[in-house]
Image 1 (cartoon, rainbow, N blue to C red):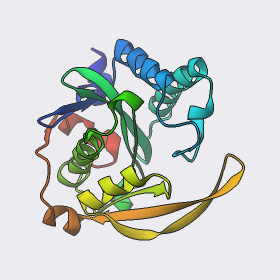
Image 2 (image 1 turned 45 degrees about the vertical axis):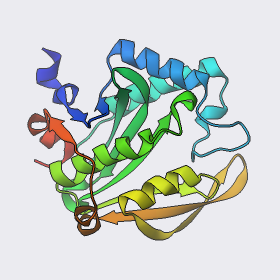
Image 3 (image 1 turned 30 degrees about the vertical axis):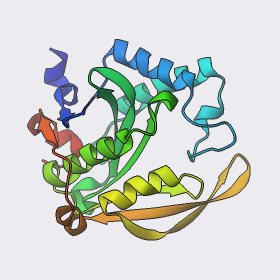
Length: 214
């Protein structure tokens, strides 16, 4: 079976509200359709790579291609796990967790997007809490980092809720303009001190070598 060769297919994160896992082909199509419907207002760009500026059909295709690219280039020393997010069985967005040289650095980064029609209901907090539980409880990470632009207050609200602290700024060129990203960092100690969402992890043990955490 394919899962014997690629055990990440069996990894599941569940909260009382959400399930996060690698998408099936049908799920990936639904995720692409969701991106085509829209992710944010056109007058702002919350991503360092402005993939959402693409026309809807190309935007959907980019979701599929990016998913395949990350799986095809996977290495225990450099990986990005793009998990589809389901609310009561309905796909609502994507939550990513990534790491380079995890065996040495024990640090992860996160990123996400939610379909426009599913925003504003607290889903973003739950889905990031799920991958933080994977990082700290499952992989024994020491730190998690993230960041957002100044015009993305919802991302900062999620970070603040989960205990992140300021970690400097980064200047980037986005849409051919200088844009300042505010970085945030969550230490293991801060994560342990906060009240956390209940998260269950299934199927992790056979994935540990692929994640640099064996």
